[in-house]
Length: 316
Ligand code: SF4
View 1 (cartoon, rainbow, N blue to C red):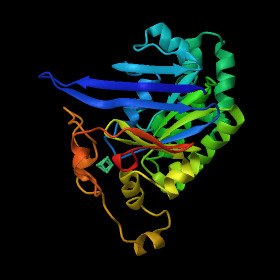
View 2 (view 1 turned 180 degrees about the vertical axis):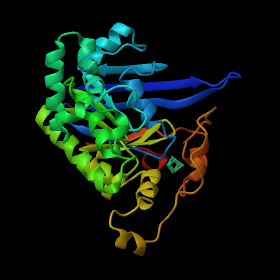
View 3 (view 1 turned 30 degrees about the vertical axis):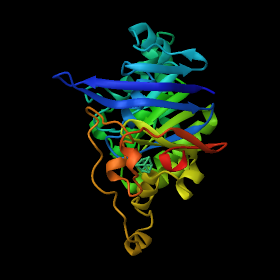
């Protein structure tokens, strides 16, 4: 196993003694060369989990391991330098994640420059190679981010992360800001890179069909906790947790014709506030199968097969 977390928590202080429980006890494992898809509505804590896992946020409590080593709860600048050679992130928004005042050469080559192992000429050559690998060309090196489309900017972001040759990459909603026609190209690019570089990925997204398509396994997050994990096809076609079932029922069909013919079952209400979280199951206020004890007792995580887990009293 390459990556593991145990009861990882990330709380943010928001004044008057209140804390926002963004991530609240997430335990996951990711095998080498595996893609784990992480899904859930906005506000479920997916991105915060990804950032905390690779040290962009300090952990409040719990553990995170990479390649058998315990990662520090709070990364020092030396830790960032050390682990950035192995752990990288591709950000959601290709518009705001690239510095508009830097050329593509400086953006993509920045990680190598920080490492200090390459000459300027070598960096230039590697940037040219990586721009070609991600479907751009070396002429683009002297241009600025505003000269590119959203899809091209995301390719620049991918080249920036991959040029370091990391082993583990958190892809934080890498396609959600892109046109549908460009999404498949970026997904195929990530898949090719995963195969050619032996990468391990945490793929965060809210489009369940896309996550099923790219992922080996899937984890479903609700209000800071993981409520279901399993092989991607099992979770998508035979969801067990009431939240996963509703999430899949409300997921739009990729084919517009089938989508129009389909009756949607929206999930009742909105995701509850992660401030001063109440005891019991976090989905209780919205769950169509809620039982009395769901409101006061947290559901245990139950294995429903050798590879599938669910946190729900219906299975306890
Ligand atoms: Fe619904 Fe209860 Fe299961 Fe929570 S524990 S998902 S409220 S049935």
